[in-house]
Length: 275
Image (cartoon, rainbow, N blue to C red; front, top):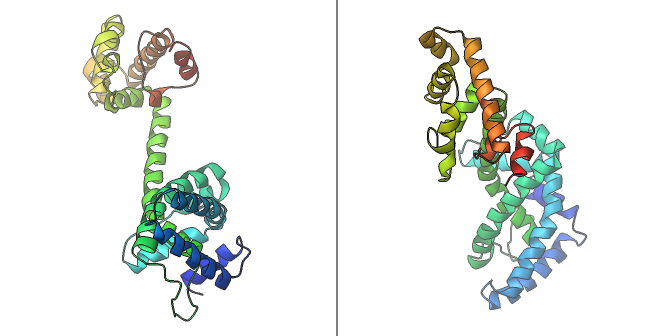
């Protein structure tokens, strides 16, 4: 069975009308939309129906793994590397939230390429004379979604990796201060390292704690700092942990701002109550 047949079969499971009747109906709809140049209120309503009707189809195909398999095959035929790990396949099978996150992004991209390729440029042909005849608009649209999937999936994976690194840092004081230094601060003066309220808090700490925090933010590991200060890695981490608690206490009192990515446990709620 060809890729387009697999898609058509999945679409047929959600749309009651026979394929030939759907193509006939779609041809009439496209002819009407062409009169308005595929824009305006009528087109917006058509697009809204198309996106809404495609959601359950995409959910089912992504959950079963069919959507992933066909998308990977499409890119392989063009010698474009695309791989979806078994772990992520299982996640997209089990997680409604992750499936919908990906589907929404896929739809937003596919809606643009579909309008241009299928309608404006005439890529969808209701008079196609191939062995199986023409496909309906929905089948064509799902095919466009598969081309969007790689871009959306890779961005989703990178976002999950960033979140995982941040979550790991929340429980590692050494990583916390390195991450604090690396995060963009969007111009909030109180969040810039070694200036404003942050400096005042740091200056109030013992000399060794000040040195530990500054060296950590500069990228030195706990062992290297311990060697420099003639201390131990455990003592370095304890100082970092204690100063992190000082920061969260100050955040809960509204004295400083901590990037949302670094909120941990109750600190998020404490800081939110002061803003």
